Length: 354
Image (cartoon, rainbow, N blue to C red; front, side):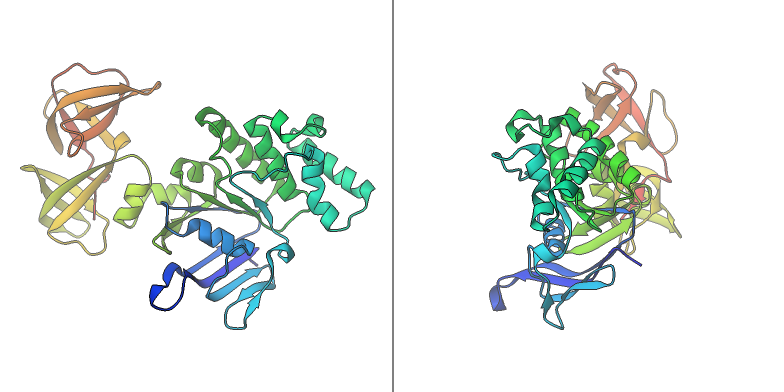
């Protein structure tokens, strides 16, 4: 049985002619021990879905169930208040009380549940120890680093053993270096404690690193869902392909097609490609990941010839731009290239048409 089930959920702001639909029939399930990332651009509905599950937004229709317990049913007029849903929630801002110590911040939910003082102390010691915060119980939030504050917020969400924890952009307030370390910590914690988690993020790298499954939202509907690997390697739509990964986008015209294989004309050059879009017309958009573009000094098959514009140093590699930024191609190189013209080979299996 699913830990969390959302079925045909709709939600809109306003009413009547001025109503603005935000969720348009979203359905999803979260299994025990699974991490599902809600991914998408701003305005796609991912945060609204999380808030609806938490009880902070009121849907219009559909159902939300935790285990066997219904917490929202639009047809029956059932809507369980947020404080009675027993969900752990980690806010983007962490929402720690500045005047309370780490211990008291984490203990707050247990005190609301009327747990006795001895049991509270034991629970706090256990959860702070699991998160590497055991020595910080008497400190105040302003005495902690950003990463430590984040872990206190997670401890507060976990301390009463909720069936599901909800994470709203949990790493967005951290700087880039700390964010990389924190996502490894968060993934390890989730696996070690066998947590069930629903996480909102706009960062596709973060979603792929932490989650078992990704739900990509687009304008209030689920565009595609699957494992991080399937979402990255086999995107079904142009939106999914563009959102996942770093890509080159080319405009072309189909000149020949045989099933899923096709030949397109791009700037006078014929290129073999693979059809991935369901409804392909004569004019198409071709997508290829940067790491799938091979740079050659001499003419090679399935390649476009372009002049090198610039190379940008990324630490472990160089990102090179060929042609103009608006309609050129980018590719990775292990070293800085000399100025000149190059052939950019585009693997037909990895050049996707939509």
